[in-house]
Length: 248
Image 1: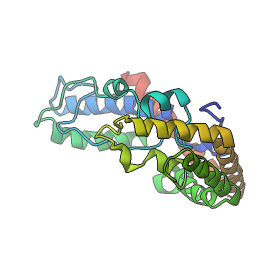
Image 2 (image 1 turned 120 degrees about the horizontal axis):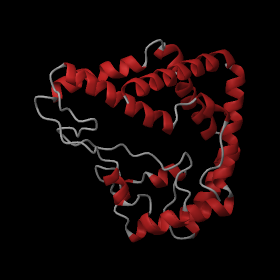
Image 3 (image 1 turned 180 degrees about the horizontal axis):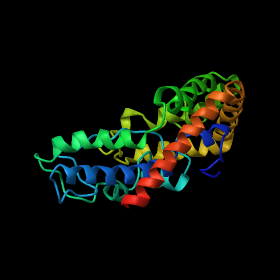
């Protein structure tokens, strides 16, 4: 079973991983310019915070974990080298720089959002996604698919979970500040059973189909609002392109 089940109707209205990457690049450039204007001539492009932050854990896909090889090796976590690679490449900010950074960062983010009605348009697709997810969770066919998947786990000697995301986020995996797990034998065996049961019962495919159907219904009902949200996303992308072209 592929980890990528293909796009759903709402994907074209949604902020993507590429958008995030490019927005981080544009924000960093704007912040560096702002910091230089405030007298910090050697401020790094990719600085570390004075205090290390705690990562928020989200499932590896919208359907929990799907990669069998990764499940065997890392359970519900990942190669620690990936966490290290995602750390800022620049030096840690000084105590003198940090207050100005806290002013420059939101200023940069506001510059990227110019011309966009955040509440009305920018947040619309995300707000609908939350509502659609609730509708999807109560779909009888999907509930039956989750129950079948859960029964499969129990039959293999593992914990009963309400759905695959609950398995992924189980506190028993003792995630650290970087969001990674301890990769214990029990965790890895559970993750392997999780993926195996998904494959056997086509859990992710049923979930994906249900989600796509509900998204299509919602978009049809609120076409004008989705279109306005897409225009806002396109405006945001154009602004990022401009910043990267001028400052990159």
